Image 1 (cartoon, helix red, strand yellow):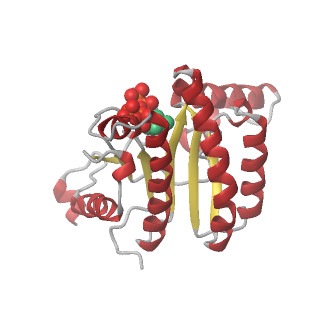
Image 2: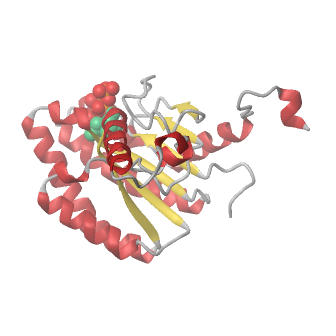
Length: 241
Ligand code: IPE
Ligand code: IPE
Ligand code: MG
């Protein structure tokens, strides 16, 4: 059941795996493994709470700068996650969309992503966006290049371009903008995540480290969202009419 004020799209900056591992005196990769379990819980919670679109920030363009072993371990974890979750996505009729610069990911991961996207492309109720090799600035540059190319080819007049038109060149082209952006682990920054799409998003900063994220915290974020007033530049009085 979807309540009236339920966000149509929640985007999450899943942060705190490393700190979780440190607190438990475990290697960072164990934090990432537990983070993958939190992803499964959150996917279920989103569907059970009627959130139709969920985008998870799983790997940023900046994350390539981490130690090589951590990057390799993250890619292995991603590969395992995708192989295991493919049947789950199909069973639960969730469409997978990759949000990010796909072609720079390891080939075996591209193959899995492509298969999962194809197998789930016709599901139209729930969408999982996986932000992989994602960065807003890279996304904008890619979009501008594509727009420029289309203009050169004469397929449209640049004077006719507005934001709606431009947004069709973003990786998120067929998803609504996030109503709510959640960041875990107490950090208060956006880290190059969906900067254009979250222009009017509500933001919820959770102190919980990502591996400990659970349905209760998800519900707390939704409840907080429901209590906010989204004014889009107008006054409270105008909204209440
Ligand atoms: C988020 O957890 C996972 C990724 C960025 C891949 P971190 O690994 O950033 O955890 P902290 O910030 O070091 O605690
Ligand atoms: C942002 O987390 C990227 C993901 C959640 C995948 P980071 O932990 O990499 O962000 P910064 O670098 O601390 O801002
Ligand atoms: Mg972090």
